[in-house]
Amino acid sequence: MQRHMARPGAGLLLVLLAAVGIAPLFTYGLSATSDLVIRDLQISEAQFGLLATVCFGCAAIGNAAFSSFADRQKDTTLFILIFGLAAAALALVALPGGYAVLLIAAMLAGFAQSFPNGVTNRVLVQRVPAAQRITWTGIKQSGVQVSQLVGSLGFPLLAAWVGWRGASLVGAVLAGVLGVLAVKLINATAMLPAAPSGARQHSATATGPSTRFIVVTLTVFGFINGLGVQATNVYLPLFAVRELDFSLLLGGLTAAVAGAFGVGARIGWGALMARGVSAPKLLLTLALLATCGAVTFWQAQVHDSAWLLWLAVVLHGAAALGVSVVLMAALLRAVPAQSLGSSTGIVSAGQFAGFTFGPLMMGALISSPGGFTAGWIAVTGVYLCCVALGLYLVFRKRA
Image (cartoon, rainbow, N blue to C red; front, side, top):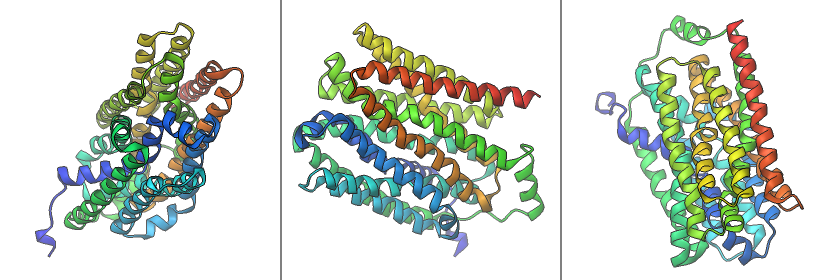
């Protein structure tokens, strides 16, 4: 039976990308139609931000609590959980309910994000040849930004036709179809021959003095960067609509452009990692560019400048959204397959903890007298913390 199984190809790569990107469609879709959602439900900007906070909070809890559970489950079981929970969350949004229903949907979408990084990393190690892994990591991690692109363009277009709830229903159907495809392709792809124990031990220790230090450091960096990423992502369309008088569709396009540059960035940074470029140097570079992006958002508001906004969007997409692939590629270099799920879960939990508090922070600030100005100053400060950590990692490696 094994001889009839396929080698990893484009279909498997599509499945990995979809698994990473399907649950974030909930947040990106609602963000792109945030002005409609806020007006229809008569909620505040801070309450809208709480949806993302609940979603990412559940993702952080899930990544931390279920990492060992995920190590013991079959790949197909985890893919069913990912796509099933994402479909359920999007379907709940489509129901004619109030704010409480959206909070429950946000919880489901969050728990759906508890497993993708771990199981997709494990699939790479166990089913994809070593020469392809880092490059594939960049592509599959771009799934989040593909989701941002699809949600930010698709949801406003569909909302003009069937409303924001109808747009979410279309997303639920998409999640169900992709889930069926994922299970079929995973079952059809052969496992690689098991590596000798000595080789596994060597691969786990060759890249650094302390795997534990690497995991902790990546977790902290992911947390800090995550604060700025989702503080920006969740409120970017609303910023464009409210502060620069963009239409709903054009406001959604800002997030879509960020997502498009994020896709290219993750693939590009992944390719550099595949060539052996140092993770600390890349993280420092991305932190510096992300800081420039946050300052540019602030200046776009100060000068009421659309072109500065688009420049900030490009910097945000190319830098802040590219960090995840560097974190995941660094893990693949440092951690053995048997503990990759739990290590990935810890780093992902750090990222999602940042994602949790970022929108909450931004929502509180833009609802205050300081408005978006206070928000962008805070995001700038967050990325400066990433710069400081990046400098520490670079100089520590040289020491």
